[in-house]
Image 1 (cartoon, helix red, strand yellow):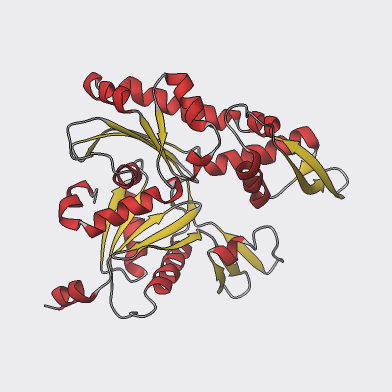
Image 2: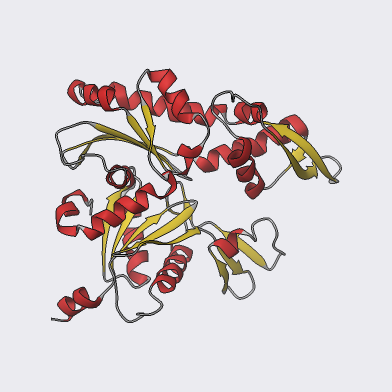
Length: 340
């Protein structure tokens, strides 16, 4: 009886629990939260001092008494306790007006997630206050969010490029026919930029600046109009602050290796896809989702390499969250796609 009452009054939610960002979709309202997956903690007391956007602003700018933690690595939970705290904070922020009602929750996870990692996600969500937790693979959620006909006997290929992982999946009849998860994505491109600037300019920069550079002037193919950007860093030898200019051509060279890993993952997926489904993909194209899909020219590069049309989903940053939200809105229809 109590379970039925909770079902009537609870708020149903969908969560894209990402390495870089966490998004929450509230049934009937759409995406109501989009925050970085970062937590700041006091070294002395162990207390949480900031979560989300306010915690990300502290990365590289804290004193010794504060440590910033990204509790998810490569798309899965690396720090169970901090993840539970973060999920609880985000859920309480969304459900602040109804704190006593436990929600049903759908969480999007990578395709390569292990049974132990699945259990960690579920337990973190339950400890954070969820009444009922279901898992959905990120490429499946992205396909739903991109409004692809996943329930038809048609091959649909989705490439979801997040912060920690790139998920490549071929979907047909509400199931994943082939999938591959490579732990190279947005974070790896940021790290590649940091390494390049250290090697070529003998300068040290932080993670947040590397991401800003990628967003502002990063590209996978040469641009019609060259871009450049003035940045400030610290000379590695002297430790003296210095401002210098970096170009889009340099950033393209810096991120070439991780970008090629993503392209090769798409090629492998096509090679291992059954001929009939591969024919469908050839006709309909490949769909890119996730924040990595926003890298200038990535769709063109993949298309050039495999000679197939490549589409970028509308608002790729929120595609997985929107797809998970559609699944929670139409729970009975989509329950067959849940993996737990």
